[in-house]
Image 1 (cartoon, rainbow, N blue to C red):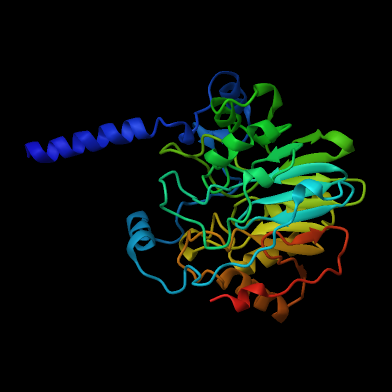
Image 2 (cartoon, rainbow, N blue to C red):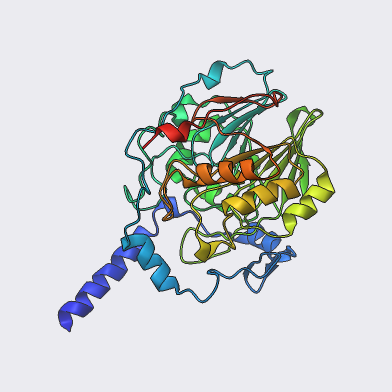
Length: 366
């Protein structure tokens, strides 16, 4: 009994001090917390989704789900081969070109109307706060913070580790002109020595005018947040970019719900919708899109083109690594087609070229 108590005590002390490392961020307080409490989306001490959103669907057990995720073997969850990529010199791209470059998972670079954006960057090669516990697939780390040009706006959809990566954010600090994130998320950036003057926190259904006359809107998403045991103490969201020539939907994580159709009705047609498609499971489909739901969400948004992301870099679910792209492509070909944007990592997407074609590159990777 003495040995058991000692082990538990030492483990608790280790966890206590480990979770005070900078990577875990900081809970909002002061003015940030006061603004959160005033939000109509903050109730009973945390942010709430628009619809009831259980952690698990059906009568599934959280313990069993996590046990299966950690210990159950599933086929082909990681590729044997190297994921193909292209190395593009982002620093010397003509600034007048409206382009997108994907870095795998949900990280990408945007150039629109001469303004540079970086969304949910993750260049550390790990999607977890525990070192080497969720390493990126071979070939997916061809880009680093050194490859990034000066960024006008860093957009963060929510504070999960695979979207808000501490090592990446720390190294990018000197390159970032402005940070835009959900309510409360700015506390992490301030804790990581970012100047509070360049941090803008936003609630759902707000807008701000950016450089060059671009309008940035925020929109609801059906998800959750948290970097410690305290969940939903910061806000998750999606972004909408409006320029004089195009309109883009920049989705973070989030399950299917009526908000997609409501956004589509409010904003009209989108030239491109970026939606998650990967790391899904029926057990948590309320907070992550299944491929069929991703296609429906794009149609609800009245999107001309759909870029499915959140795949091809990390194993966060039990499906085969290539299933998301394979399945959404097959479903799209069987129904009322939407133009799919499926670039390799680093392959440039020309936002004003709706005829640009992309290969099914995943078919050549084992």
